[in-house]
Amino acid sequence: MRRAAAAVRAVRPGEGVVDGVLAGAFLVVMTAERIGTAERIDGRMPAALLLTAVIAGVLTLRRTAPVAAYLAGSAALAAEAQWLVADPVSPYANLIGLYSVGLYATRARARSGPVLVLLGMAGYFADRTDGLPEIPGGVLFLWLLAWALGYATARRQEERALARRGLRHQVAADERARIARELHDLVGHSVNVMLVQAGAARRTLDRDPGRARELLTGLEQTGREALDELDRVLGLLRRAAVSDPVEGPAPSLQPGLADLPRLAARLAQAGVEVTVRLDRSVGRIPATVDRSAYRIVQEALTNSVKHGGAATAEVSVDRSGDGLEVVVRDHGLGPAAGYTPGRGLLGIAERVAVLGGTVRHGGGDGGGFQLRALLPLR
Image (tube, rainbow, N blue to C red; front, top):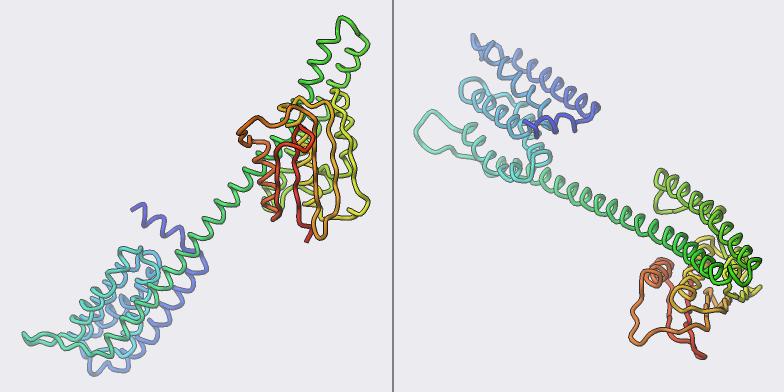
């Protein structure tokens, strides 16, 4: 009953109208044919009209209950052929019903189509003797072909629906990963800078209250900027989820390479000196690359502060052929032996992979840690 109710709800109003018009057209044509053969039917006209109504009427159920509709139509068609004068139009209504079995029935029920065809044919071509019915091969082939066309069409529709569901799930997974990267880059960077500022203020509180006050002021400013950016990112993600989650936040409201000096100034308040060199040849680049390059630098610097304990770092951005080369070096502790990438480096790798670029990271030439990413511009 639940499946039947679901099937009824799945039929769109336009489809119901089409089926009603189809059934009405068959009813009119078949009734006219019956009236034309009234002399041959004689006193069995009421039964003939009743069977005509059944054969045509079940077409209105061909989407919601295709197997039951076909069985009822086949039974009426067999009764008409054996007890009345066979109608030359009614078999075509039955043919449409069989096509609907292959197209609209569930996979398991649709597979019973060939068996239903044989049963219907046996009833239609049965005579009044005890011998087996002789079923014309051409008619059987045509009916089986109609069922096969409906069945194959339904399977293709299932495959397309499965592909669409898979695509929706993939888009949702990509969106969750993108949100996780955005929040990790934003919250992780800001919290780490705030921790460094708080630690420096605690260490200088007794011997240099003025410096401690500056660090606490910077800590407050970093927190406010982080909250503002978090609110902006969440707002953009909400709007992107409503419109097109694949395209992502509006580029004009996301930080880019032009904001690197502000990022360096924020780290300077935490006691980390960052030198930024943005080559003029970079020029105008795609907004997606611009935003990703900023986030890569931000996360790399966060790792320098959090894991490397670096006091100085260098950032360089240059155009390299048809790509953008981003290099971040620090002079901290460097990577431990056999280190494995954490969430930060994995997030950078995901960003680079989305753009079709490459990334390398490890120990620098003069110690510390170095990350080099090449992002295609085309």
